[in-house]
Length: 75
Image 1: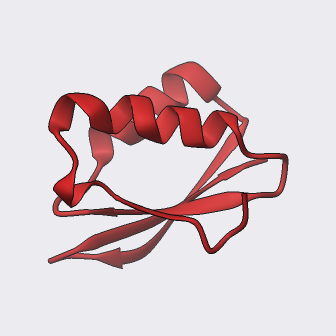
Image 2: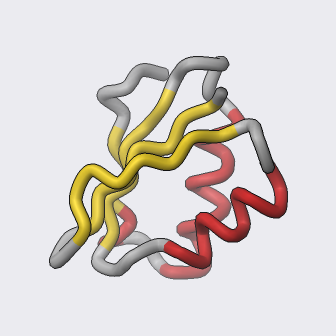
């Protein structure tokens, strides 16, 4: 997986979003990342990352509205 990987969840059924995001994260090697595209600020997702992967991920906003883009990486 490379930094050019982008997951646009705006077209994905809501119940399938977090499983897809977390499986993508699990496939990352340390230092790799992917870009998440969403139609709202994914704060609940960040809280879930903090609960399940505290200290093992990075979270960088690339764009904040009206489309949110976040680079999520494995540290």
